[in-house]
Image 1: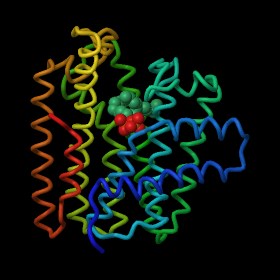
Image 2: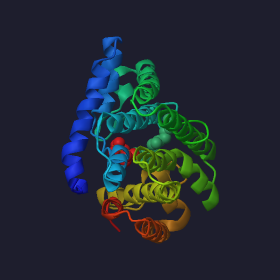
Image 3: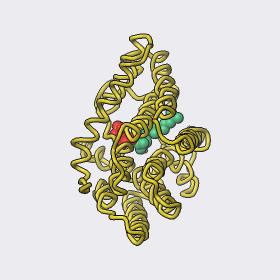
Image 4: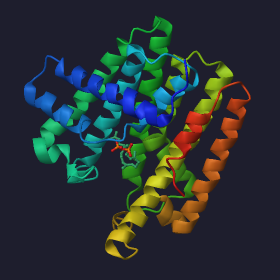
Length: 295
Ligand code: GRG
């Protein structure tokens, strides 16, 4: 099997994944407005970075991209989408727009937005349970996903974020918060790709470390973009996070400090790839994934 580029994976496999996501919702025997609300956010223009990580990991190990891979990648995107729907609710971040479109609760109302999130979260586990992988592997992935998404992962990070509002967190506290809130699902994507591909335990461990760094870089980069895009738009340095007294890397370290931190994390991530390459895996797709961060 010849190795694909990230762009080819995006054009072909992510396109196919988008169809799987829509089909999965459309096949549900559920009330129509609930299905519409789930589909609305699933199709609202997300970058699909988490599924892409799974696809890229599988491709790096020359693992065939089949229905099982789409179930693992699709179930993760369902969970990511649920987290954004709930994050946007008035009780959480209270956002009216996401990806330039009205948020789920602005279109469907708060009650249905809660249910759309609940629906995607639970349907994700049903889809994953039916991925058709060998039972032991399937159960391992279910446990890994529950751990990453739940109160020892993303939900924990979100709770820390809410608790930390209006108080200055330290850098270690911020890193724990983001390892959960943003990092856990991203790290899971690399682990899931490794498990789907029968990677050795050493390779899986390296990818898990790489995934933790990638997740951290993703958050720092998102925080930096928030500042630089707002500065461009408004021509001044006061941005939403600062105005709302949010704990972000630029508010804690300053913009230059956050950029330096990102450079440091990316160089540590590259060191992981050197280790992975030494096990005989071609790392071009992982290098390409690092290219997402333009510094
Ligand atoms: C509600 C339990 C619960 C958790 C919500 C992920 C999250 C936790 C909140 C999102 C807050 C946020 C904007 C974090 C910054 C980094 C991040 C996760 C951005 C969104 O992910 P992308 O960029 O989104 O992959 P798209 O829109 O491309 O799908």
